[in-house]
Length: 88
Image (cartoon, rainbow, N blue to C red; front, side, top):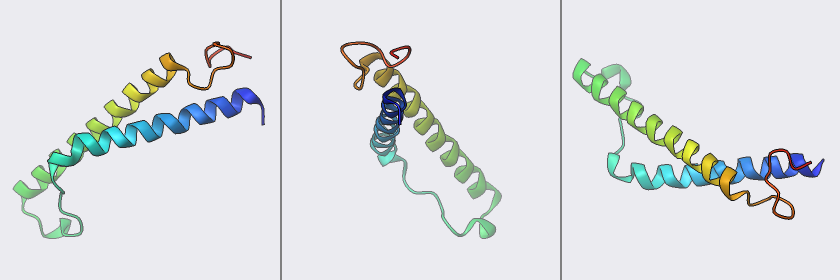
């Protein structure tokens, strides 16, 4: 595997890890939506569930974008101070 590919995959991995950790921290106070009882929910409960799904999705995507930005700026796997993009 080329060094550029290895650095890209390493950056992708650390981005996903950071986004997952941020998601866990940010969603701790949201509570847990209903798991297997979707069929028996009232319309009001389904709306609450859909809002919880949207909130959690928003938190994860925001965390992913933030983490990608930090990894891109920080360039933890760059060689000799060169940025990941265009380094080879």
